Image (cartoon, rainbow, N blue to C red; front, side, top):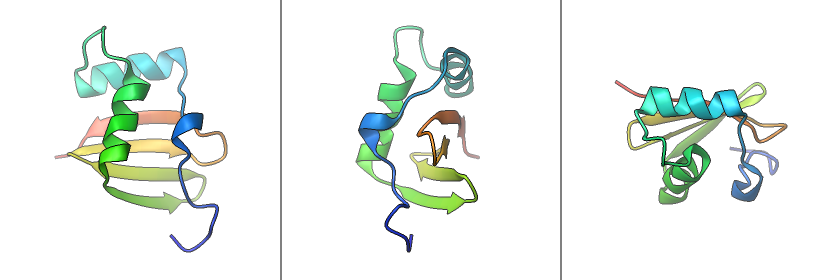
Length: 81
């Protein structure tokens, strides 16, 4: 990352209700697991981040997280193969 605005502020991360459902399904999380908190934990643990256009892509522990850079909305997360 070369620009100072290329970073994720963990306190601002959020998702929609549909986003929560999509993340739970894609990562096989239980109903008791808060998806945003789970993903924040992965980000805190460290990994690789890149920015392509309007989105950040964060990769850690075989999970790829897509985050809108402008709104800090977690769009989705998938297991990587």
